[in-house]
Image (tube, rainbow, N blue to C red; front, side, top):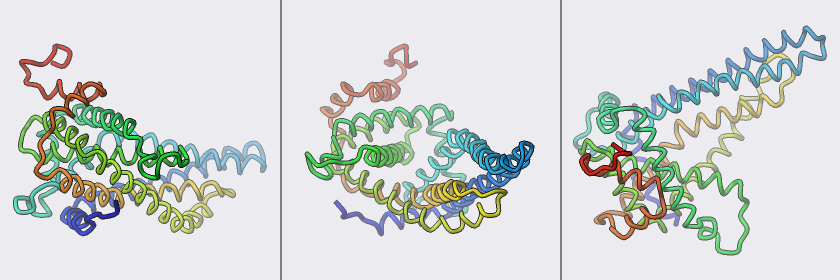
Length: 318
């Protein structure tokens, strides 16, 4: 299962260098905002805590740091639901464009954003597609019993790491399904999403395992980055008021998440696109798998309803 076409995946990512630059700027800008918020919150908390005497300074600085990080985290959550997801979808669109017909590197950002906007006219439609894809793929993962198939039946696997890896695998697969809709010239993305999910179901034994392995590799690389980030995080937290050992861990986690989102995630998604292309080459969606998904997944039924011609859609989906 480790026969990945890494060179092809890396080449696919390198064709989208402007998007990598945007991701680095955006996510490392977010990391800088976290640092500023943590330092400012620690200073405010230190000052407020001083009202209660010397003993109140350290707790005040700690809770001020947590409050600053929580504030930026809320803003990030809002951005993730709108701006960041749009940028990531456009990056996927750039990855799957034919290099011969793709615009120059300086024009691919605007071109890819326009593709996303043409396929999904409103942001809520793009977010709905994401949720429905997650639900359908989640059903496949639940029925596939991936932990048992990966390490063998009857062998124990800690539930927390397994669930985290499976959630990450689900994200990779939903990005690949979205890629098919963005690569197609059709203005209605829902039939392409339906067909991509059926093809995924047809090849689930191979593709879900590969997605899980890529997710595990992503977590392994992230842990290595986390260890490297501890030293600069400790230096930054040392400049905050008070003794904030916990701030070191929080900042290291922020730096690790930033690096993962900016550089590790695009490589893994590009690699998954390559694996799906290899596994499904020459195949057509199987009607039996279409029927099976329709029975077991209400999210897939919703996608099928949206993919149907407007005149034949049930009133609920009109």
